[in-house]
Image 1 (cartoon, rainbow, N blue to C red):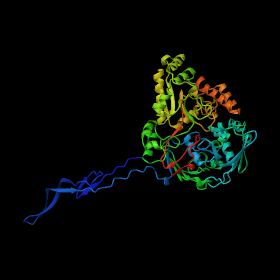
Image 2 (cartoon, rainbow, N blue to C red):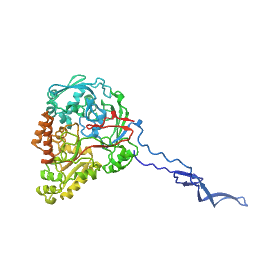
Image 3 (cartoon, rainbow, N blue to C red):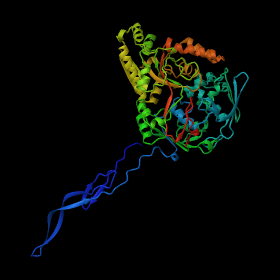
Image 4 (cartoon, helix red, strand yellow):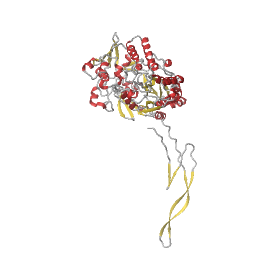
Length: 599
């Protein structure tokens, strides 16, 4: 996809091959080249015997290179008629709508599928597969009216039962969907998901019903002010059980996948590219301007940036930024690239979790020492070159109610870090075992984790061993460590890297769904009775001020009192995009390409 081209001009004169370098400018002066050429001469002797002899003589050959026009500059971007061209920084682990948990898979699924609602640029929602909803007086029953003109990519009508099937499949224990936890707000959801086996009674007890073809009813256990935001999340996507039965584990591959969104899956060449095309019978097809979308799978961010600068993509990375942190100073100083650079609101937290079941990180004093030994400001300023980002202390990110920033946690304090370590029995790092750190492979993760490891080694006098893996392998291994009967105690890591970008604007999304002891998304083995109690109380509380107080207390328990996690910084997103592309990303979920345009 990306390479260099060279041009050679070859001139042949009689039997002589002469290579002449041509440069731009005035017509060149003819070059005189002297060569010895063999010439055949016929000599007749008196006896009229003809014989051939070879004689040598010098001849002058004049070579006049033909002036050429300089080659045209490379295009600034692919022509818009080729559609949108961008990159993924990793192979999407899956397009199974109920199993996808990562931002790369979700970015593609968001184009192929449509939930009842979708997120807008300001974080609000608008109707998508639905047209409206009503809430009962007690705040528990949501009656959702669906569109009657929505069809699947094979022409079948989208009906309420498909949404029921999608949520039910998500919650069935045999599906083993990690995001099932998010739907425990629904009456009967937790009972179904945690059962040893699915029974008709459990499925009947799930309060998600198709009242008729275009009316969906969802009943919650308790009123939830933020539940409408969930209607825009991929846990509310419809599904075609007939296609899953027909194709089995291959149902989400290209050629088998049938969605209900504005784009359909044309091809998925694993480890290479994903190609989507506009679905002509989409209910809002007239609003979809971009006809085709190509995601090149490019693992190295430096390569993704080079492709962008060479005019091979419109956007340098769709799910992520698409350029190494080390290039950011150059981008910001470059007169052209700086105009194409944009910071985008994206609440989330980048952190390292600590294995509380494996020595030496089973000791809270060790965990606190590790937290206090990290200079987060240096990481932001010098490693990532992102000085605008805020230091982190608590888990709740900037932009979400209840964020506490550095009011809690352990900011960089070398003396305190060394004191914590000495209290744990390792003065100056003496006797401290090798600290095993796992992370998923990417240029920025490597820079960050190498910097953190260097800080721990220099500031605490300990040894650190870094291990990186491809994203899918990394997730699979961490999930295996977290799946009973196995626990993190049996896994050879002390520290793991992870990040969480918010799915909706409530602390519950990160404190409960990621860091609660029962969450499938944290791999620390940590238990805390008070923390779990606060999560339950906050869900039932309708007074927002009281809820925030509960979440802030829980945040302090996790990041300071127990220090089971070390927040490193709060996210925002940066993008490089060609000026011809009009685009936006919502603060939650991924971008809706159907809303984008070329000028």
